[in-house]
View 1 (cartoon, rainbow, N blue to C red):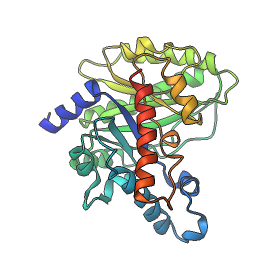
View 2 (view 1 turned 45 degrees about the horizontal axis):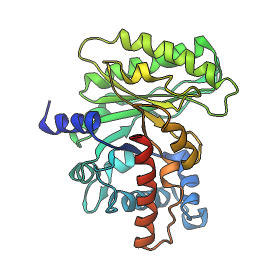
View 3 (view 1 turned 60 degrees about the vertical axis):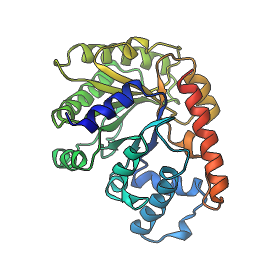
Amino acid sequence: MTADHNAMLAQIEKGDGFIAALDQSGGSTPGALKGYGIGEDRFSTDEEMFALIHAMRERVMTSPCFTGEKVIGAILFERTMDGQAGGKPVAELLWERGVVPFLKVDKGLEEERDGVKLMKPIGGLGELLDRAKAKGIFGTKMRSVIERANPAGIAAIVAQQFAVASEINAHGLMPIIEPEVSIKSPERAECDSILLAELSKALDALPAGERVMLKLTIPVQANLFKPLVNHPKVLKVVALSGGFSRAEACAELAKNQGMIASFSRALLNELRDEMSDHEFNASLGGAIDEIHAASVA
């Protein structure tokens, strides 16, 4: 392991903060821009759209408040990883600020089957992982979605996630496994319980030397996932905001010992393109403070 890798590992394991999710992909980018105050009349091609979202992310990543003191990691979209911020490669800039860079590697979701949406096949994963590692990326993230308390479907999601995680581990990167339980599911609590059992079995079966991170929907029952937080094969359990407002997500997260935030919308949803730098940094700083407080509660 390199010195940087070991230092990043220590920052995630012992750092006092949360992970920012800056990884909206092509399908969700127009919505993210609209929330930021940039309508579709401002771009006519994908390149123009991605340039605008990159400018927003660069403004976030170079803000004085976006440092490893409270933001210990950031999840990036592939185009963000390949870009620059503050005149430097993005991963390099982040790590100079004490923020550990991760990369979203999934290619979206299959149609729902057995109450879940599995990941689409990830073509060229090995090449992407090698490129990410060369750029200074520490780990990866991949998302599936659970809609119903279907044991076969949830078992399939966990099996798929851990199979891909094994390949990611083999490339020397830390996988974040994200089997999101939809907060709109009428069977959320049952989904949580089945998922806990499946994740526990998969973690117990991990080969020696392999560890993972987990990104989970905040459970209906507070501290349900405490056994996962304490599992020796788990580096960190992080929580997604899942459509909750920031106030709701922070209130729910604070009930769960050992889980930290990995929020996207709940972090960024009050930022606007037309804000002055002072207004932007004050708004972002307030969001970071609130989410940090919930993560270390």
